[in-house]
Length: 387
Length: 132
Image (cartoon, rainbow over all chains, first blue to last red; front, side, top):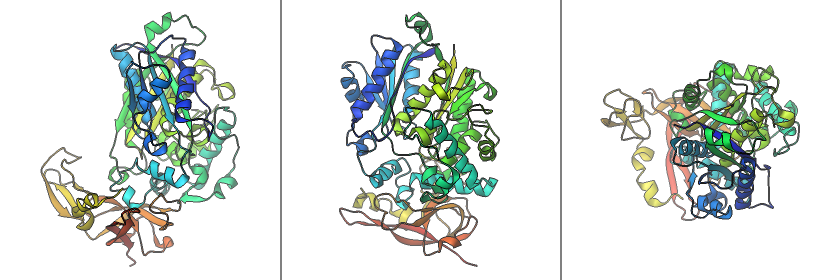
């Protein structure tokens, strides 16, 4: 297996981007990544996308994006794994380069969610749950994570204030990220006065509906070293792991965390030879505030049940014990579903290159991204390091 | 879209509450499956879910998806049965403040929703909190 480097990144502005189409978003982020890499062609591409079919009534989007990017006869493949579509696509790109099948692979993630009304979008997202045995009971995604939050509060005494601390921190980080959807600081009162979506989760516990795209270019590390473009430190993919779990939340052994996160992380740590203590910065899948608390526990940063206290104590702030979601996370940066996993990886690359602007974590050498799909039925964990 | 064949073929589990029990390890799974997710055995028998279970966790849905908006707000719980099987179901005919983790529920047969275009009504299990 060849070592793989990320040689280019492109992260578009996230938000309600009415002036931009699905194909505009994907092409712009992809062109940025290709230019950043300084390569003159790509051999193959993967596109992470959750549900263009329901959001814009378009399937078969991989050739569409390749076509509009100016590539007609290369392989282009869509990867769908709900909210983990982006990192699942990245993993396929990694495998293709590592195996020697292709030398220059583009991985893009894209979602255009604001062309339909909110109840329709809530419905589209709910299709990532078990349609026959969860969807038909009227469960929503905020509802699924509310079930986890309720149980987490019951077993460990996790508080409203601790959930709020996640949202407050991520809005603070997003405030300093020009690409983020939200540039507004929020406080406990704002959260407690926001509408209840699914008890105990309020509007400000939820990531928003977002348009956006992100892309990265992968190459063999040895080839990347020969690139004339030496503007950035080289970033290597040192480990990647994916794990899946039952589609239905009810069938999981634990309702206070996600076993797939722990398992995917175990695989990524093993491949990279890194330990949890080696991680300097992490982007985790905070689709809801409770999801960030579960993620930092399931990844091993904090003991099970102690995640809420850790966030409240400021241990996950930039400058804290382990900075979590310096980009603003899904909560503050926005969550264009298929783009999210790729954007998280690109954000970690920015951190490791020292290009994260006001949200830069000092001396970040090793970073981790955790992308979760459904109510935890798919998780991909990626570990990156500066070469 | 929930068409008639799609509803019809789910009758055993939705209308008769059939579950599978693994002949090797004893695990009970709802809905029924062809392979035991715990031990991999394909030797499964059909059992019926017990009539009562307890609430493991619950939420009140206040922003509903298409098809459920007229029901909102409504409660959804994960219910665990005495034989270990678990299912997600709505809690009905119960004041929200009476719903608590650990409380016993009784399974009832109710309308789940009406499919918009064809008007096909889909039925299935829901639960009521049993007051002691």
